Structures are given as C-alpha cells and as structure tokens.
Length: 435
Ligand code: UGA
Image (tube, rainbow, N blue to C red; front, side):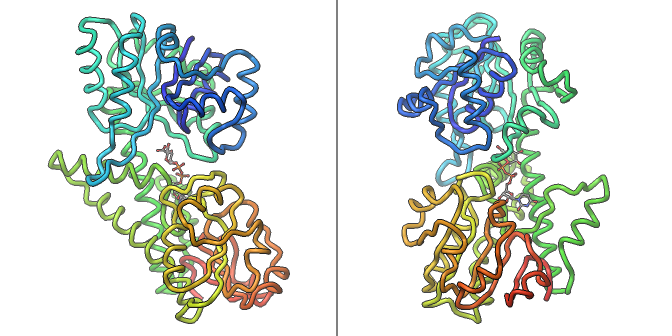
C-alpha cells in the first residue's frame, strides 16, 4: 500500500519508518525543508534507539522516502496520516489544532477517491468530525474517509511499541475504510496484536483515557511513596505487593520525581479542560495534575534538606536531565524545576546526560555540564540521580566518593539502596524508603 505521512516529527517518523518496514511504500512529508534535506542525507532530527538503522535500511530498500511535496505524494496515497504536533494552547490548556486543520486544508484538494485520512496526532474528542466537515467544505460529495488511529508509542521504546503493540485502535465508521486499515496493519495483526475497531469518538477517547489512567497510576504510587517515608515503609515492596495482583499489574508503579514528557502533562491537561467544558469534570485527573506539579516543584527541597538546610555556595551534581532514559527530550522534565530552584537557592549545578545536554543548555543557561558522572561530581556536596539511564546504573562508588566534597546520594529513581551505598561512605536518600 502507499502511505503518506504528514509531519516528520517523532510520531510521523517512527510510524512511517515502521510501516515501511512492514513492506508498505511510505513518504514522510514535512514543511521544514532543512529537516527533509537532513533526512534525505540520513540525518535524524530526534534520538530514538534503533531508528537510524531502520530508516537507512528502508530507504535503501526503496520503501521509504522524504519530501516537502504534498500534492504528488498525497495524490498517490491509499492512506494519508496526519502526524503533526498538537501542543497545549497557551492560556487554556486545550490542544492546539491549528497544525492539524491547516494540514487537512492543504491535503484535501489532492486526495484520491476512496483514500483514508487517519489522525495519529493526539486530538480532542470530536476532531475527526471537524476534519470531515473541513473536507466536505472544500470537496462536497467527494468520497474520502476520516479515521482515528491514535498512537501508543513510548519514547525510547517506540519501534518495539509500534511493531509489537498491545493493541491497535482504529476509530472508523465505513466498511471500505475499515478494510484499508485492516490491510495496513495485517503484517502485525497476524502476530496477534488485536485490532480494536470502534467509533471515531471512542478511539479519540481511548487515547486520552489511556494516558490519563497511566498518569494517575504513577501519581498514586508517588503519593504512596510519601506515605511510606512518613510511616517507615518501602514503596518498592508495596508496589511489588500490589502489582502481583493481576487486576493492578506491575507496570507504571515506579515512584519517582513525577511524570514529565510531551504526552502525559499535555494530554491530562487537555482531557481536564474538555471534561470541564462538557460539564463532566474529572476530579481524579484534576487532582493528578495538581499533585504532579507540586511534586516536581518540591524536588529541590529534598536536596536542600539532604544538604543540611542550605545549598548556597555548594556544588550539586545531577545525573540525567531528559524526562526519561533513551531520549534527548527535555519537555516537562522534572530536572528543569529542580535545577532552576537549586540555582535560585545559590547552588552551582553541574549536570551530565548521555543525550539531552544540548537541549538542556538552551533551557537552563546557568547550568554547567560535565561529560560523565565522575567529572560532574568533582567537589560536589551531593549527587542527584534524576534520570535512570543505563549509564548510571553501575556507577563506581569508590571513585565517586573520592571526588566528592561530601558523599551524599539522592536517588530520585530508586536505582540503588542504602545498604549498598553506605559501604562507600555515602548518605543515601531514596524515594518512599524510610531511613
Ligand atoms: C507515554 C505513553 O506511555 C505512551 O503509551 C503514549 O503513546 C505516549 O505517552 C504518547 O501519548 O505519545 P512517553 O511519554 O514516551 O509515553 O513516556 P512513558 O514511558 O510513558 O513515561 C512518561 C513519564 O512517566 C516519564 O516522566 C517517566 O519517568 C514517568 N514514569 C513512568 C514514572 O515516573 N513511573 C513509572 O512507573 C512509569
């Protein structure tokens, strides 16, 4: 099948490349000429493990290409995916649909008869209907189908998630469009990834409901961690204990600094706003958002307390800046308020991250950078493990302790344990694990 992807950002690029790898013929389009020129030279705009290899293999096989030319690529396509950004609109938290709407206006004159237009971008409930209206305004009576096909990719594991998904959700009304989407996903659905065909509105809701539920699950265990700290419990044991109940499940129960990234914060906010607007407020989600924001704002206080009540004039090392491992993405990363507040409290903050230092430098101009953990901790009063990169999972503690002014380890991801670190003279502070 011929697929055209409108938008060659994270979602468009991963989805387009994986669809090409299934054997489809895919062109990824973007307005950004430099981005397309870079992609044509094999240079990727994002870091995602395994993506560069998959792109070059599929380009070499002639199944994947990059272009700025909408007209001819849309004219040939059986399926046109909309994978442009839907950021939070300034001021009200609603998803900003201006890119999606202008993409639809641009592609509509070129669509061939019977083509499917599928939204991959996370869009509010009712967007499919709105897009159909726009198409009808431009070409009344012309037979094209608007389908909702939300993505559930995690950054850092996106190729695995696309190729071996728990499920594929397709919101579609027409039989012909359903058949096209079934053909598109046949290469993975034969490996038993269930395809859930449902209404367009339900598909749009499923995307938000899934992310909101996961954000709530993380927030639950984070509050449980606080309680464990007060009561003398260990949140990891509690998470293990409840996670063995199949109805709860073990995943997304890692207590930490609060969720970040480009999805959970944006999608929970958009769902909250939609729910309020339609007179059905979701108080669980409102509270989740509030707790998570407060948690991220309070991280610096943990470090300040661990350092005896002040960090003024002290060096603090941060291991990890990205919102999670295996990405260079800094959006809504807990490291941002943490670093800002430590700097405001008078600390010198030195950070290291395998991928995110370039993005962090533009956001945090007063931050200092080091090429590795050992150089980051020189003369430091405390080291904070912020992002659980593999590079930080087997540290040489004797070496770290030797270089630090004061061996204090604040582990926001519970990678290590007190017993292990005290052997090297460290004082250790985990999350949800009482002294
Ligand atoms: C998330 C969802 O997991 C994907 O299914 C979805 O497709 C995607 O959003 C999206 O809407 O596009 P992502 O934001 O890449 O994916 O990252 P996650 O792995 O879900 O992590 C999100 C945040 O939660 C991170 O800050 C992470 O550190 C935090 N987290 C995750 C925890 O604090 N504890 C956990 O147990 C799990």
